[in-house]
Length: 186
Image (cartoon, rainbow, N blue to C red; front, side):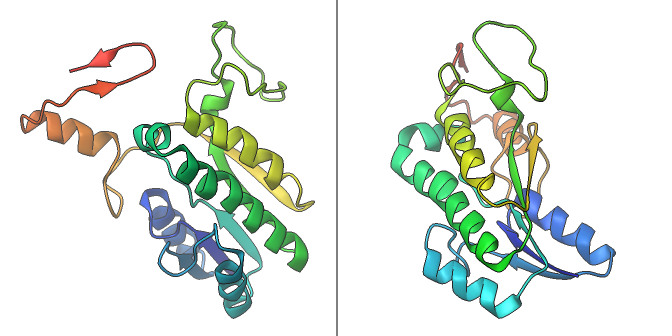
């Protein structure tokens, strides 16, 4: 089986690629340099070259602070990128597995949500989650789609920009202020 992985060089992508290789699949881990999901012509070329049986769509701008500061970029990568992947895969009748976020279940009412609950865009906790909500709409436009909502990821990965790096930075004495929705952490 041929597996293309957008974001295949990222934290999760490296682990997903290794898992498919362990199952003797031919893996094509697309990096941002090789296949920009926000550019349909570059994505088309990458998919034409490898002709995958399935696409695992992991490419996303996931840094919450950056998504808040650079909303146009977050929308371009997370929403437009997903639309492009979904459309390109639909044209080729390739299943796409879109990785979203379990933060879509978060709400201001404090009530737990069922997996099949209708998620409203209003009241989502941050712009990253808003882009994932919109991106799920485009993922569903491909009849051969799967949506997986993951929780927070941690670990060193190939390039650690997440919680482990944050904690290590604090332990080294780098005490910058981190802004969350509810309070500041110093």
